[in-house]
Length: 274
Image (tube, rainbow, N blue to C red; front, side, top):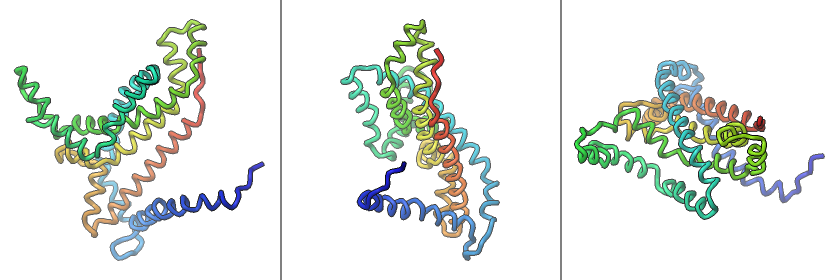
């Protein structure tokens, strides 16, 4: 039987409900209103229909985000595993080193990376010092993806690390007793148990990657127009607010679908097959 909430418990939830309505529900309704109206306030579907002209931008944004998410997982999973297996004092040190860049503004971090990759930056200076030709990195897709990886890697590591911290070591001992080597233990025991953390990390990296605009502007050198850049540009002028709202609405729907799919799979416990 469900416990009935007391008056104090219901009252304690009021501030959160007010906050959610004012800063989540209301903005979503405003975006939806602008997406289906014209400059005179009349109902129209032209804003939604105009999105077909931005299909290539959606495709490039999704591709960049998927690549960045893949490399974050490729780098973040071994890092999270190493952290979880280290001594408690070492774990704290590694956690501080991982979180330290997050204490700095995204703008400063992106500018710092741009300075390193620039034609006269540290990387090219080192290449020239050993007799190699400088490489143009800023203004390339690789630089944009590198910026996404650098800025969003902690979002991949933290949920995976949390899943590994909750993992019962008796499963590893049982796998060893049943004859599993390190490779089999990793893929048959550790990986299924940490699947919820992996899915959470993928969601937490993919969502900001697909909607970012500052990274692509600075590291892309204006050569790449992603969804975030397009939305920002549309909201610079009142006459294009409605198209920007339509793109934002579609993006929100896609993000909500991806989050729902990830949550659906993360709710299911992974089976361990030894």
